[in-house]
Amino acid sequence: MGRLAPNVSGDLVRVALREAHPAGLTLRQLVAATQLTPAQVSTGLRFLRDTLAALGLPPLVWSRRDGYRHTDDPAVLVAYERAFIRTELTRIARLLSGTVIPHAQRLPDDEWAELILGQLTGVKSALSLLVRVGQ
Image (tube, rainbow, N blue to C red; front, side, top):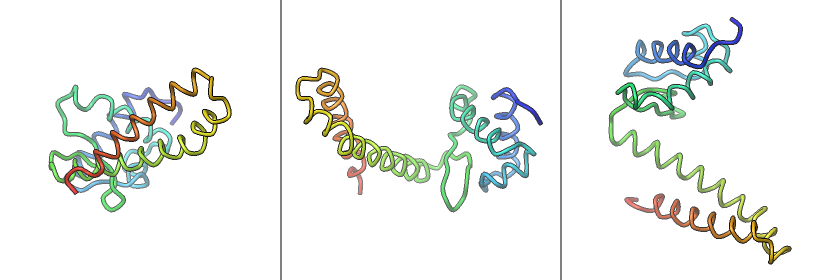
C-alpha cells in the first residue's frame, strides 16, 4: 500500500479498534488487522488522537498490557493521563538538568536561557503537582 492520507489510515485503525472493543490491540495486532505498515498505523493513531473528540468518540489510551483502545472508564483515563504526565515530567526534568540549566549558568545574560529556564521550571512544578495529587 503506498502513501495514505492520515484520515484513511485513521479510519482503518478506528474500525479495527471498534471490532476489538472492549479489548485493545497492540501495534503489531493493528498492523495485522488493518494490513497497514507500522508507520501508517502510527499515522492513523495520531490522526485519531487529534479527531476523536470532534467525532464524539471515547478517548484513545495505550497501556503495555492492553495496547491501544477506546475507553470512557475514568480509572483507565486517569491512569493513562498520570503515566503520560510522569513521562513528560521526566523529559522536562532531563532537558532542564542536561541542557537548559548548564546553558543558563554558562551564559547568565542570555535572554533565551532565562526565558526557557523560567518557563520550564514552572511547567516542571505544575507536572510534579499533578503527579502527586491523589496518590
